[in-house]
Length: 288
Image (cartoon, rainbow, N blue to C red; front, side):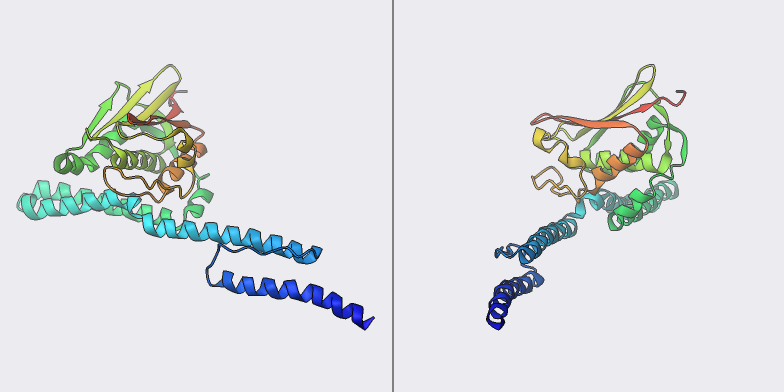
């Protein structure tokens, strides 16, 4: 009996000791490891669990590295605006009170937006959980767009971007003003980053009897069909070079998706490689 017990304990202890040694490697941050099977059911189940945990830890680590390395995308546009308007105050508008105050208002507005964006980056889950609390009101998408273009005007004056509003519709819908402002800003920031050589970004507002269709169009390099669904995922990033030489946190379009889903607005992207992209959403007209 003792001999049998000895061999059984050896059969169990050897693979467990091996798992223990491999687990020590995992603890050092080495994720390209595999916990082997041994033919003992209980030990094999433990190996499967540890292999699953290893894969999940690897994904989380990649996500962490991606966020830290690529956070510049969502912060780059407001930081550029703040820096540029600060330089203008120093060089041009310092002695002109009205112009200086306008420039300072834009800097303050962009600083507030930076705070909002940082909060979203730090706690995207909290943002999602609170999305049901929509403060619905009647909004003019044309007015929101005009305000957005005003904030981005420094990109026109300093970097030759061209912002165009197409369509005669006011685009009046029911929505949460703060959240819809964030949708337009994130769409625009994405277009600014991926704009084509013409540096032209088109804001198109169309309507029919029931709906408003809002589009932001650029003439950049476009999106491959294989990526069109992925771009809406949390922390998706694109490592290809583009105009502003930045890489995304992947949070911007994910936030857009969450906000538009909570509003029950249809949305999507049409894109052709080498010709550009059109991001859009469709919302019921306010009087409907």
